[in-house]
Amino acid sequence: MFTYNDGGRKAAGYTGKAGDCVARSIAIASGYSYATIYEALAKGMGEQRVTKRTGKQPRSARDGIHTGRKWFKDFMVGIGFRWVPTMRIGSGTTVHLDAAELPMGRLVVAVSRHYTAMIDGVIHDTYDPRRGKSWSFEPDKGQELKANQGRNVNGVWTEIGGRAVYGFWIKEG
Image (tube, rainbow, N blue to C red; front, side):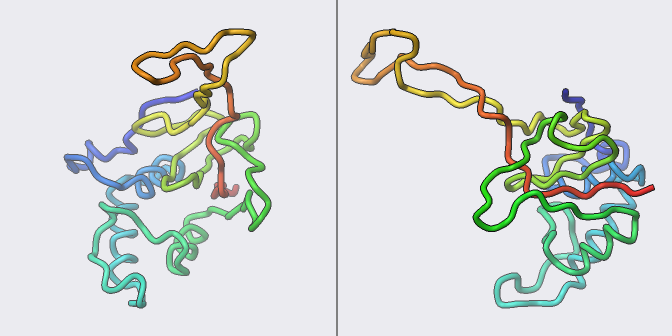
């Protein structure tokens, strides 16, 4: 299931489009205000150590957060979350963005290039981030291949089990 939720971004006075899924999902799952989470993440981004790959970062959470950094992990633990990895190198996808495969509770879920909040099996985000179907151009159940302007137009939608989950932060207590 999916529920539209901007995490309080609009109510906090932030406008326009932004790549703030980390701040938004943490605000939703933690219960803290969007402004509080945004400011804490912006401070962390502005103060993080400069490396060859990241360089000097602006003091902003608008265009994404480096979630692999120590300061971010310490921040999440500090507000009561625990990291649960669901993928290992070479393991392939073992958990999907599906209520049946994730625990109940307040989660901040890491999927490819996105963070989303899940509360008791319901996704809370500004769009539905699940990827549940894939288009196959192979004929299904005896259908013949048809051509349309030189392209195969026959095919079927098949369930693929949803978007792969890399891990999630779960609210403790």
